[in-house]
Length: 456
Image (tube, rainbow, N blue to C red; front, side, top):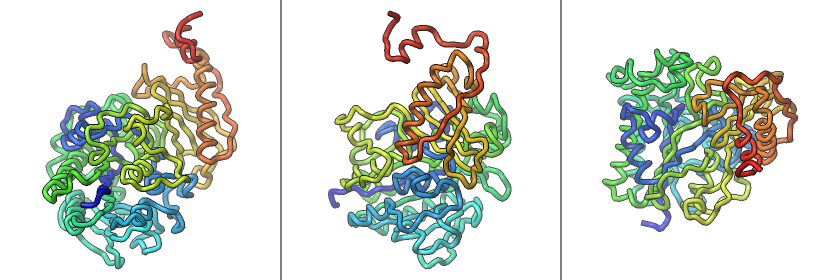
């Protein structure tokens, strides 16, 4: 086996972080992910940089923000001139393969010039529209329709195992992209494998969904059933690597493109600043990540491409806008940012910043969110104190006692916007409103936020 490791990306769609046992879910949905996270490196505070499918995928393929790739919303194809992970790994001698949902092309079947440089291809641009839970349809490298047997999660996992087996004697980079636990669009439901949804009906519900309702009571059993079957598939892929003697020579990354708020924050499932939309599970195992423990720092999806390249010994391009985690894991860098930046499109043209304690978001109410990737003027829309309100049920924006917090976060958000290559906008403060009873900041908190440790 060559010194450089193989790489498998196990990518789900619309999976909340709190579906996992390591994040406190009591339903035992993810025993394989939990084992991967505890034996490898668990990114405990991991967030997408854009809570919608296509833009998030463009960032993960390129290490660039969606406003840089041009794919700031769905239905904008990734330019054939843009270099992806497939190009970088291919140039380093890897064979590269893509299986599953792509969502970065102009239509189906996806032509060779819209495949992001992947050599092996068994995929669909919009898997939710060309297939169903028990009707798995993809297209091969010759653009021919391929129907795979079995439940869709199992069918894709089978295809991935065949690819791994066929390439076990060479270096490979495989991107395995599932649709689940995303809803099935044409009937707006979450079709689990037969018998799986019934396991979770009437059981545990995340507190934000319990408080806000939405469609969770109807959809959560199927959603949880899909998550469980995905985890079964993860176990099967890991078993295949072990049986082929590849487990010690393969990096496996598990993550998702965005979360799911079940129509509690807007009229569908994502595209909001809330953790239900932006926080997702992430863990890595294999060379460089074994026994890495739990990383508590806030990490963005845009940091994964440079991390994978760095871990494989491939140079990270200077134009990538994310940062490799390897110096953090190797304890050679203590300058990691203490916030993550989020761009929001389609439902609104918005921007957000998330720190360990605060969520601060702005929106451009007059912008055409389908046509305008950014705006010249935003207004403060959300402020959440995540220490006191982890499920983001009390919006503090405009509350007079928190004006200083907004001032500080506004400056940090503007700095993040500039760093992403956007022109600096104007951010208008929210209209002030009185501080509600039993809510405010102590003098000590205010001074600590300003850099003082105690009252003086």
